[in-house]
Image (cartoon, rainbow, N blue to C red):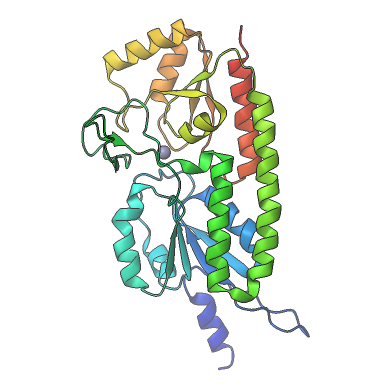
Length: 309
Ligand code: ZN
């Protein structure tokens, strides 16, 4: 009978329980934190350390723009202390249901306070079906409603801002951990500053500052470092024959050698453009779990592509 309770606790969906080492006082129960995307897991773990347990909603390989939580995830969400949203539109669709399952759960929206940019190459058609359909309010000069770019985490300075929000939310939920969260944040922020400096140095003075990418996930990165992304994807879909022909012309004109793709999206059109220009396809994953190393790799790829004569 005395084994029954631990067994039942272990069967609770999702959240692992650490056994205290014999003879030591038990650690305080970790905060259960849910995030939407894989890179956010690293952000929360860096700030939270051993005081948090993090689960990711969008599983590796899945598109973050069209995702349905599994029943197991919905059950785990019912016991979460904090949800860290990033601003992709399926969150809006699910947040009502998530809040209904767990009204006590704190929700932190990491995109709050970050100035939104508009996605490139977006026509005015409503409902792309891909999640890039949230409108930025029209400015005083135009009536254009442009799609908001949700990929804020591709810019290291914005990640620093997101991490500060995570530090504050964790401190509110667990004041005893405040000093640890502050110290962890400071260390992470210093690494993000170093990353930012490295990327700046690497991309300074490139001959060509435009790059061609299938899914336009790198807009905030491009803005931060003075680059321009040229997306192949149209409205969340493969381009039609005319758009594809125009892209091939443009790639030839701009002497593009590499078309960047992301594992969660089709590489068919990218491969077609690459074949037509005698170039190649290269993976640049905006959802890689190892954020710092991945961004260094991305900068190296862009530096190599942009350094061409
Ligand atoms: Zn995306």
